[in-house]
Length: 472
Ligand code: GLN
Image (cartoon, rainbow, N blue to C red):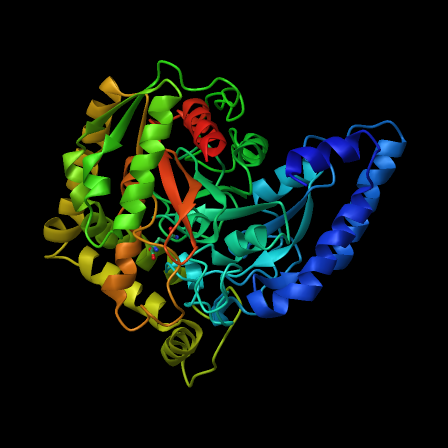
């Protein structure tokens, strides 16, 4: 059952939320040993919450648009009293004293949180292999990765553990695992969803967004979590666009641009390009006007991102000092305690990012690296703006290929970074983008295509995504 169907059945009293949650917990018990989507389950709290939802329905009170719908939460979202680790040893044992705004909004909408999902440590990675607690496996093929960094959330939806999940996307961490797991995943416009309670990686890029099996479910979840939050200073004050408003509109007369730089990016599997072209044809057949468009500066996206994101990370991760959160490795003096805590607490990729970022920000290199990267970022935004003068939405591949084997890219960080070549430009521009499953590769593994839209263009973005979904 989709989230829309579950919520409808629970609200009408046709189905009990407790039953729905029990079914999903059973599925998790049966299969998550082999998938490892979850780091922590909150089964008792979920059943209790589901019982409250059922009581509300019995009393004639509407529990909300996600009544009784199970949701999995990426473990970089703060949950009050529930372990929140970012898949890092450094946060082991830490229980946040508050809920992230998205978590409170889910609860207020009647949703039932099932637990916390695995990720690459601090969301740095594209395969979920950087988790300190072991990798997640792709439900379509356990020898392969689910993508990352929100691999646990993507796998949870793909395995039927939860119809909905939340992830975070800094450079592609929702869309890329969605593509590799054959589910829908969306990164909203920067500022549309509150980041309050999302453990920061790169604050100017991080956005929380939905995973779902269907476009309509993803839109429903986004509409629940979107909207201004005074607790996040980067939260947009304007009324959020409706993700669901355009779902049934079709694409007749819409102008869609196929982005040249995304279909010719380095390292793309030709099968992904073929699926993207089929998607373009399907939109054309549905009445859209499709044309090639160039977003020239997008080719510099990866290079700019790997300066900006580590720079922000090096600053954000300074707070893990053995004093305020989680792990502390004792030392003879405070400096030794800091060094030992951070040496033991952080994994190799996190250390690499902290060093890269510290270097990029250091006096003498700041203008050459960080400053230059910020200029590139502005160019990318300008080039997208020019494209949106002529097009309502853009199209491209999501990931360079299908799910790869565990271990295939762990020894070469640069090969791993190339996974985000098609997703990063939207983060740098602050624009929304959604990945929709579109066909399979020769091995039968799912592939995804991406619909991109201008800032606050979620309505048209989901409109195009729904048409693609229907055309498969
Ligand atoms: N894979 C990219 C990285 O490692 C993106 C991560 C993300 O979006 N959180 O930085």
